[in-house]
Image 1 (cartoon, one colour):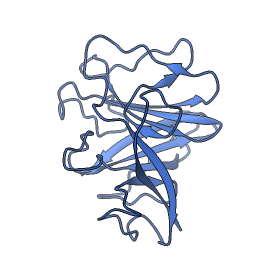
Image 2 (cartoon, helix red, strand yellow; image 1 turned 90 degrees about the horizontal axis):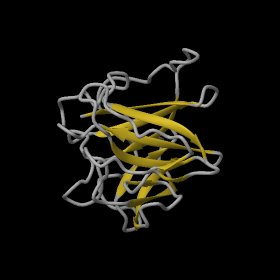
Image 3 (tube, rainbow, N blue to C red; image 1 turned 60 degrees about the vertical axis):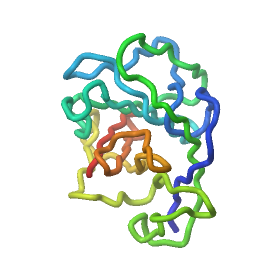
Image 4 (cartoon, rainbow, N blue to C red; image 1 turned 90 degrees about the vertical axis):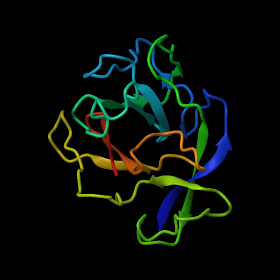
Amino acid sequence: MTTLLLYGGETDPAAPVSRTGGLPLVPDGFDWPLCAECERAMQFIAHLDRGEDVVSVFMCQNDPGMCEEWDPSAGGNRARVLPAEGLAPAAVPAEGRTLLEDVSVLVAQCVEAKGYGQADTDGPVDGRPVLGQLGGVPAWLQNDETPDCGGCGEQMGFVAQLEEGHGHAAPINFGGGCAYVFACDACKEAAFLWQC
């Protein structure tokens, strides 16, 4: 079985559900991530609800392709594991490309397939576009780039694979490819990368 992430329509920008776009839900004292290369605010990409915690994903889109936003350690993106309780919408920086134009609910649905690569993701599933997968095994477009945790040094666990969006005007820029989100549950660290 494979758990696909299907397009579940639009929602409130601060909805506490798995989604792409909208506003990040954050704890008190949260600082909006800045790109290590251009030093401007990153774009919020996804809120992934894992029950006890959430993973928030950010990527620099101030000058796409110039800040190595595809690399998990170059500083052009950031993923954070945050506790699920006590979160509120973040204050959005006044400058930088910070928010996606589209807010899409990610609905998890199990399908009969040995993996994401074997699932029928070219067309809609139950009439809804496929926006990725939750858990399982990454369907790498290139080589396996599973990151190691900066805290404990162990290989991180796979959280989700994300497509650029639904429809012809994809709201997220993964260079025509897809993205991968990882987390270390022991250290509460996360990582993000994309391939095309």
